[in-house]
Length: 126
Image (cartoon, rainbow, N blue to C red):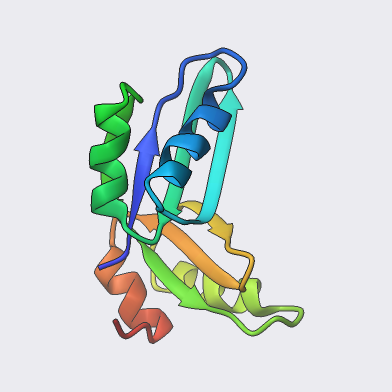
């Protein structure tokens, strides 16, 4: 099951660096990350190679981890139109995407309420 760690960082310099250092010392790899500050709300979503361990270790280091959520991850071909094709399949089926970002190796990470349905629609097998 693919999961991402959700953090609400303190609004001060160095919080993302601190998180990366903690995970690095623990030997946990960050496969993708989305860090956004918008209208005073800070959120970090981190796709980790060991999400359960990362969640626990960050909590132990007083990082404001708020959730560990299931996501749909689909591998895309690295060519124009792939994002549109994948998202169109979900839109046409009425699946609302709440958040999306890409990993460096062309995997699309999707946060949505209907994760299992999204996986089926995109042909994701675990």
